[in-house]
Amino acid sequence: MPLKNSIIIKTDASTRNGDGVGIAFSARVTKQEGVMFKEEGSRFVDSDCKTTYAETLAALYSLSELNKSFKTKEINFNNFIVIIESDCEHTVRKINKENYSDKVDRSINHFRRRTRDLRSRWIPRSQNKKADAMAREAFRRGEEEN
Image (cartoon, rainbow, N blue to C red; front, side):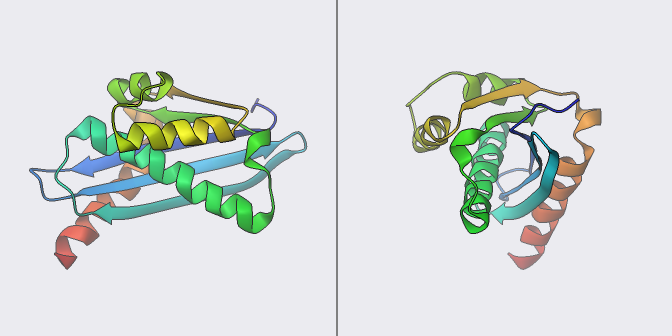
């Protein structure tokens, strides 16, 4: 049973040898009455970064896109518990720890202050197939364009 007033976000990233990174998310927004809506997104980022950083970028991208969507729908982000699910254990630890070492950490902490609660949890890769496929597709599209 889904949590009431929650946003469950599955995120993933796909990268290879400094050729950029595909990032993606699939989210389910639930209020007391049930599922309000589902949202997903993906994009290519022309950046040379390690896997954990790429996975963290995917989480930040998801928060940013959902925040924009909420403003359009006139929904208050502060009323929700946000759970970011990732198959990268390092990313889960990074998100769960308040850290201010770089711009991405500070940005995630900005969203932490804008929600009722922001946390992350690890999920097996087998439960993250949709976000994984979307990230791979975003990476492939980015490779073709560059």
